Amino acid sequence: MSAIFNFQSLLTVILLLICTCAYIRSLAPSLLDKNKTGLLGIFWKCARIGERKSPFVAVCCVLMAISILFGQ
Image (tube, rainbow, N blue to C red; front, side, top):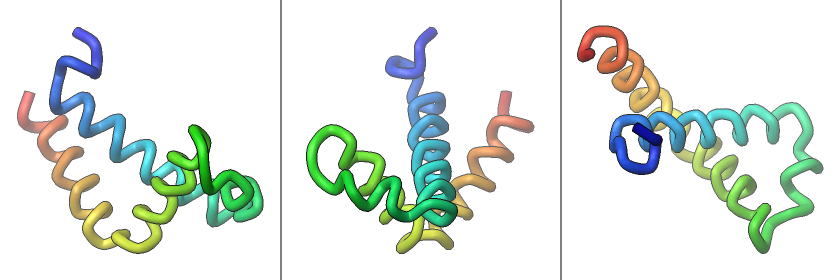
């Protein structure tokens, strides 16, 4: 089953996207800052969510890891 139809997989992909974009922006800020609009602006927005909501994103990552390890 693809990640589009499986809700848990979709949440995992979104969390990984947010964490990856925030990490890339911490290493090379100019890489994501030049694309604030358009299709590539999605990555900039994910990086901003990862930076500003980092405690909530971290808790979600831990909960997702627990549910993947022990829930299935």
